[in-house]
Image (tube, rainbow, N blue to C red; front, side, top):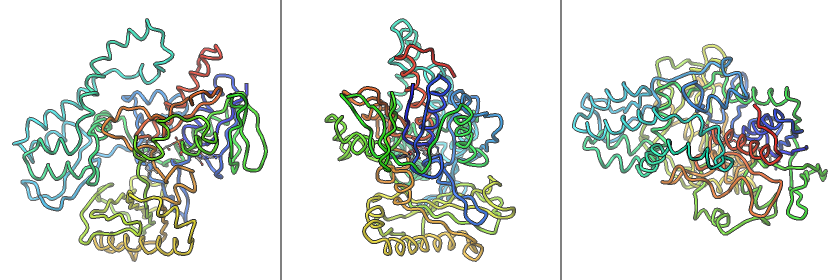
Length: 505
Ligand SMILES: Cc1cc2nc3c(=O)[nH]c(=O)nc-3n(C[C@H](O)[C@H](O)[C@H](O)COP(=O)(O)OP(=O)(O)OC[C@H]3O[C@@H](n4cnc5c(N)ncnc54)[C@H](O)[C@@H]3O)c2cc1C
């Protein structure tokens, strides 16, 4: 049975591996010259610049996603880095009782609790509540849920899941807490400001912070030395070893449909490749409105276009520099207030800067040198995407000018940076959109709203359409690599179930 997959990102490659393991004949079509999609890196004069990937949920055995990654990758062969501090946030208005203006978000829960209590003993109740909720998260047994597809479970097995009711109740309660509502519970001005600034001034569900922290404490979220290419390259290799086929530099234009059944893909070149099943692991907007011509939509999907239902995860303006220095002793991720705010040509105003010093991965730079990346979420990705199309020269000029302003501000803060820069690389939302096709240059699909555990209305199956499935980071708000692999695995399980094949890994 032949299956066509659109896209060689993590979702497309993972689906390809699982399909090959189960006896299907899979071809992946990728419009770019290489694999990885958003999870990628590129070389410039001896430096490797990452698209932004920082940590993998499931890097360690303590996390249930480890089991999934292990099905595709020899996880023992990858060295993961576990930072002691997730981030350092330098505050503007307040300092702690020891005179330190920097908030340290430790990855060890014991250390974090001690630290929070030492800077704000008056907030013992909310602090202990926060740490307790993370410790509780660690106690729930999650693995079976990660490996199951609820819709495939017979009723008698669903009943067994009653034991997870406390987890659901816990998550349902926890999802209502945001960093702003939590900050309201605090009396200490330093902590209040720190929690309000955790998501760069935005209000976000606390679960986005607490879930990864709970797993970091157990060494379940780490950075793979070698970055994206090391990680995703392993999945691509596995797919090829399983005798899957990938056609790079091959853009799919449309998904052919005959009597409400997907029958294959029509390439931009005009070539038609028939298949029994088609899977799109590409952008949702392209899939729904271009590839399928907008023929399989409902009211909810239409609401997505206007972003009434969910907001798109922000895109990024990212400056990466190769610097002839090691920055030993500097935190790997620091956010600090700017002396003068930076205003992007797209209209977004920034009061702070975030600097990643990637000196913990020696593969990214020659000895004695370091890759530094500074990225800004933008509130107006369309500005860059439209400008690049309408006026490429002005686009280049504005992009370089804003990058210079960012480097100047970083230099003013880090000191002596500019004269040591050997290479500069600038990516805008237009870059992310151009290389991966993601709508509005989104870096993680949909932005998780207050209801963080919600499903995206873009389901894996389109209403009324047979032999077609949609996977990837647009299927669950918040996106990321776990959503990519889980959605891929689930769909292959569903396909196996329908074809009456036992699912094998
Ligand atoms: C700055 C940044 C930081 C991030 N940090 C993290 C992190 O620390 N941890 C984490 O888990 N996630 C992180 N993410 C998110 C993560 O990288 C993505 O959510 C994930 O890679 C999405 O995978 P995907 O396969 O669903 O989609 P994509 O990566 O978008 O893959 C889609 C693929 O489809 C191809 N394609 C599109 N249209 C067509 C077409 N018509 N024909 C053929 N091919 C097509 C694209 O070229 C692409 O290769 C980050 C992302 C960015 C950019």
